Every structure is written in C-alpha cells, then in structure tokens.
Amino acid sequence: MTPITTFFRNLEAKCCASCGQVISEQAESYATECYTCQDQASTDAYKHYYKKN
Ligand SMILES: [Zn+2]
Image (tube, rainbow, N blue to C red; front, side, top):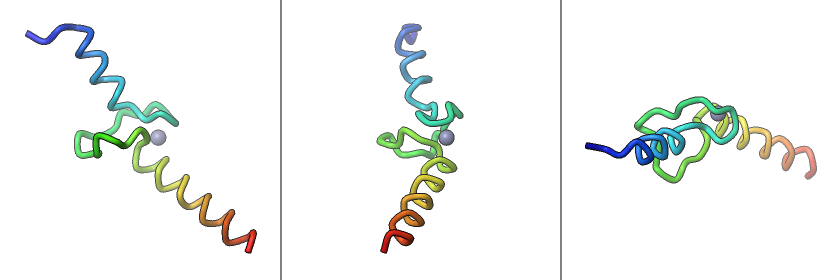
C-alpha cells in the first residue's frame, strides 16, 4: 500500500510549477511546467532575444 505522503508528493511533482495544471504522465520527470507554459516561455524568450538583436 502506498503511503499517503508519497501519493501527495507524486501528485505535486506532476503539477505545473507555473500554472498549477496537472502535467500528463507522458511528461518527462525533469519537467516542472506543462507543455503550454514551456512552449510559452520558450516563445517569449525567443521573441525577447530576437527583438534585442
Ligand atoms: Zn503550466
């Protein structure tokens, strides 16, 4: 039987650090943000970098 603390730890690890949305089980273990936030962050970073140069 899985201890309740482990259950909540796993649950927390699968939530997006940015918007709190639950990340799908297909997400890589190192990902702390959902695909939407990751894509948005990389897009913003690219735009910022592009404008700057
Ligand atoms: Zn998110």
